[in-house]
Length: 301
Image 1 (tube, rainbow, N blue to C red):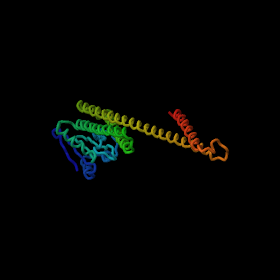
Image 2 (image 1 turned 90 degrees about the vertical axis):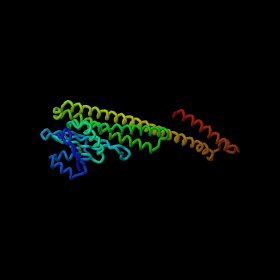
Image 3 (image 1 turned 30 degrees about the vertical axis):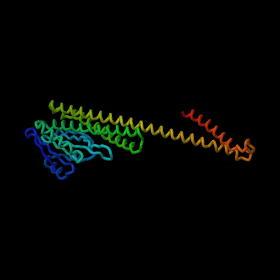
Image 4 (image 1 turned 60 degrees about the horizontal axis):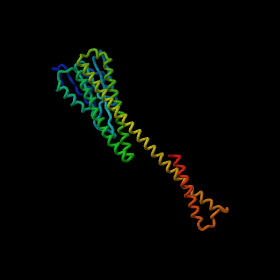
């Protein structure tokens, strides 16, 4: 299924395409002579951010990373959304995960119908980059809550939740970096020389917003990575302390066994026949244990 919007006094046409509707996609290909290569990129759910321009066909292909609004496996991911500009048409290929962008773009058309397809495209990319910010803020808020819980008690559940946040930020950092690089690459294409000042200014605005998204996601990732490393060190220190305690305790337990074993030998020893022999053996064990405890404590302190 497809929806069409005309703008700029009917000179240009925006065609919304559902990626999952194969019949509509094939019909569009025949009607507007879209190349197989462009359609392959448009329908690939795992396509990376990219931009290509065919000067002969006057066709611009742009695949942009769009953040998903709902979490998967307790973290955010991104999906590609494809834009194709060909002469007087602009095509958007949206999936279930990226469909929320369409109403945002429709509002842009309503607010300013007198804009070129390139201006409309760059404004849309500006808005998409802005959708990363609320997700990063949500991750930061969740990180703060997790940090407070971990300070009270370090549990596997909280550590796994922190790991999920870190995985999600890896996706967001990678996606925002790809988007920023893509917008930089547009300036190296021949179509950039055909843009007017307003279109170039809008491209610069979209690039600035994309770079801000990179900085924000990268900062959040670095903070979370540092926090995760800190808790890893704390867990290692706790494990070392536990091992030290068990080592000291096992050594202390050997002292009474060593002392009493002497009295079990068939050799003459002091206090063997004394009624206080067991007390003397216990006292010797206690003194040696205290001495060993002090010596070990000074060594491992």
